[in-house]
Image (cartoon, rainbow, N blue to C red; front, side, top):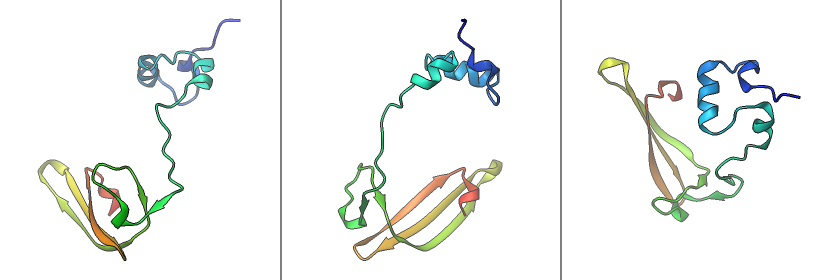
Length: 100
């Protein structure tokens, strides 16, 4: 039996099939055996004071302030200040206006 191409899976067109081929995913069977590069355990919560620069971490905090800045060409910057009992962070997203 010939392996079925991912191109014929609903929602996968030529462009997406090309992207998957770059990951060496060409058949439905390849999809089943494809493993992600890494796993992020987001179940362990940290305080802001525990997080070090460059560390990937999940925090629980309160939103203290937020703002949306529109730039020429329809680009946007969303800034959100968050904090907990141990500190404060400023989060910045580019081109994600729906986050506001």
